[in-house]
Image 1 (cartoon, rainbow, N blue to C red):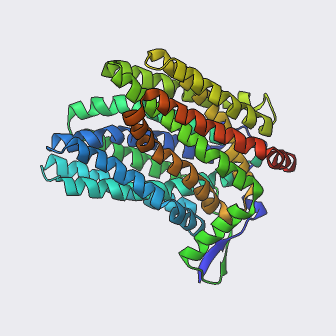
Image 2 (cartoon, helix red, strand yellow):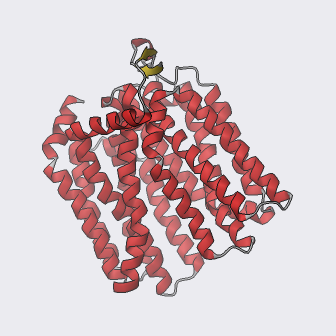
Image 3 (cartoon, rainbow, N blue to C red):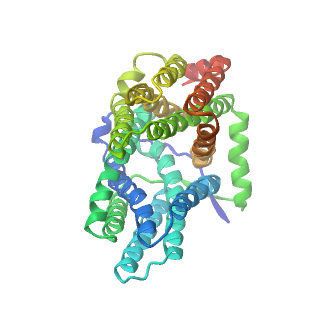
Length: 417
């Protein structure tokens, strides 16, 4: 027999506490802050390690591609498994597994026994655990905080991710300079700290369980897909999320290629990317205030209407460092929209389906974003930077059209919420 989850009144979080006094959420958030910092450190350390072992730039790029493909491929199974098992236990196993993997890799590096095959194996296995942990961690939030606090909780998660992506690469470069194994030891330690934090969470990390008929993993994934297809709101979210994620990722990648072609130094490129990341971090910090300005459906339409204008402004500034300013502004609005969307999905989706539903939405968004670099790179190579920026403007416009066509659905969801 397998276990299927059902919600229970005893699992309801305390709605009277401010989020900062929610012990369980604070433990989860703090542990993941350290863990995501460690992951961002490894993002830089992996290609540096491949290159240092006489690997080519192609092999370094192939490592990143392998991880991206694994994350997309395992997104749906991870959501189904997060719904099938105890989410707290899933996170503990993933943290322990990643700590072991990176400790083993660091040891192999110190012993001079880390060929490319070992590096690729560790990176691939870690990517699988990353996806499974992410599905469980995103799904558990609604069991730890009250429904009214979900947008704020997801906004804090957005700030955590942007902060880690901003601080991780410089820290990774510094640690790598101390020794090839040091960044991976740091990452292993970050997973151990995350494991410790998750272990101290008191609230049940999974709704009350009851035995039901045995179902296959395929059945569970299809159940999640059917739930998404049957929901007008979730269909609207996917239609908006896929093109806008393509646009944001493509715009950032276009900026790097365009600024490189126009002769800007690596230092200038680093500053430009840092400015864009700061825009997202500030947006995450102010997300709660931005969300109070307008009702959900209007905020979403306004944000998606502003984005094409900002991307057009960046296109006009093509080749100048100033082109990153509109991109940073566009990214400022993204966390407010993302956090309220995921908060709404978590609030309106049955607890037993949350892993699968969120994984379907994440798959649509990440798959589109993963395609952006190769599509934009091809356009830049054959048609130039202006054509590439025009492509991302068109993608942003598609997202706006989807929002306008689904205004009634979004408004109805707002009223129901």
